[in-house]
Length: 123
Image (cartoon, rainbow, N blue to C red; front, side, top):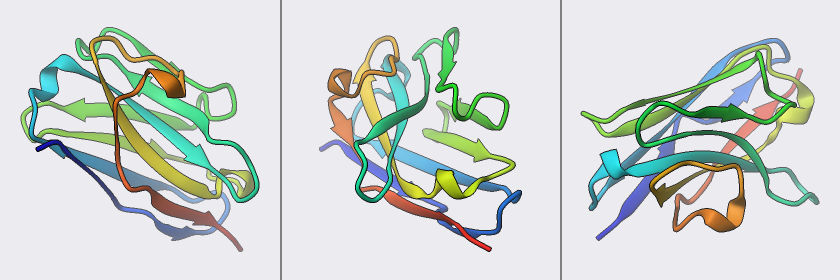
């Protein structure tokens, strides 16, 4: 049974940092590309970042480029999203998603999704 569980969300002040995690089980993690997506209140879900199964390809949305870092540890198996210099507009529910093979920033490409994790940036 495939399970995808996010953790590490919470509240942080503007300019602060937060790392969220996504632990997966029930399949061969090494074969899967991982994506992070987010959805703010009243807005559509959008892509944040993704990392391929081979570590070779990493992509970021323009809105987070230079501030967020995605990484994965296939031994755990877990994927991380390190978020720095957080802004009010980063407030959203963050979702981890998996697809077999290469990662993309397209929501429709993903098969398995976590339950979401709230990140709030507030002063």
